[in-house]
Amino acid sequence: MPNKIREEIKRLKDERGAIILAHSYQPGVIQDVADFVGDSLELSRIAAKEAAELVVFCGVKFMAETAKLLSPESIVVLAAPRADCSLAACMSGEDLRKMKKKYPGASSVMYVNSTLDLKAETWSCCTSANSVEVVNAAPSNEVIFGPDRNLGTWVAEQTDKKLHIWPGGCHAHSGADIRDLRDKKAEWPDAEILVHPESPSVFLWEADEVLGTGGMIRHIRNSQGKRFIIGTEEGMLYRLQTLFPEKEFVAAGIIICDDMQMTTLEDILKALESDDPGIQIPVELAERASEAVRRMTEIGK
Ligand code: SF4
Image 1 (spheres, protein in one colour):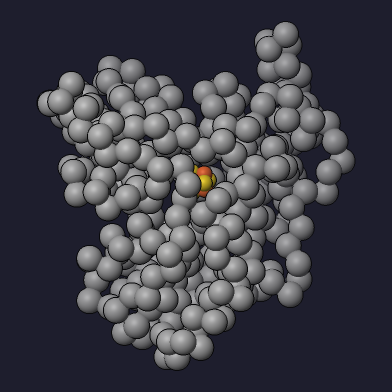
Image 2 (cartoon, rainbow, N blue to C red):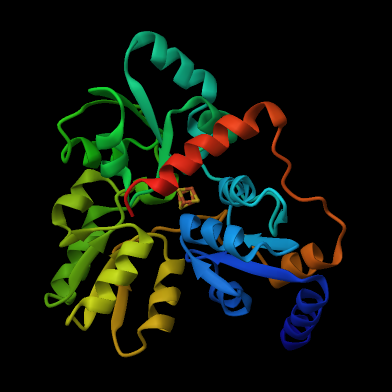
């Protein structure tokens, strides 16, 4: 049966001029049928470049929205329509408006893992890879940063700007237990420890490198190391093992995002079969949110 679904996905994809994009945290079976696997920014850029008639996005809501902002002519369908992000949900545009009143004169930088109304309200978005550069480029010495406090704390340590950090977090990364990482270190003393900046600070202190998912791949490609302890969502291990079969990877702890694991092959098939108009961006948000995302793509990595 799974093979039959894969064949049908391929047939419909070709028939409809569609591309399938999968985030690196997606289940292995989804990564295997995708045309491109990557982080949210890489995938949005690919969506814009490919200009496919239909983009089936395997990830969570804010990612499909970002892809739609960068490729408004394409139909962008989120394969698992209920897949959302606990981090994006923890700060709204209204929250940012209140912070702007509290810190007049401060500009704002919001992680791309955010809702559309928050994107529309901020000066710029950032990724984990270019967060420090975007903050440094902000047109004020004080910067409101959100929604992730762990990423914000990490950025604050690397900039001279004064950050006002929203206390939000990703439930998957924030729930990681440092004792698991220490156990892995004891088992694999020769391994390099790579940790995503959404993880709690105590994880970052024990890491050899703090990197987003794209940065992890680039680092491993250039590293002589053979074993790596990975501190991010567990779907990433499948991605790394596929790219680097000669190296070994182990999770730093239990970091599982239920929303990221929600997509099924049946969802992809349904998205290809239906006449779903896809992600719709309200006109009152489109221009301002696109501007914040565009700025993010132009600064740094
Ligand atoms: S892993 Fe965390 S930040 Fe990423 S989609 Fe899931 S809840 Fe959001």
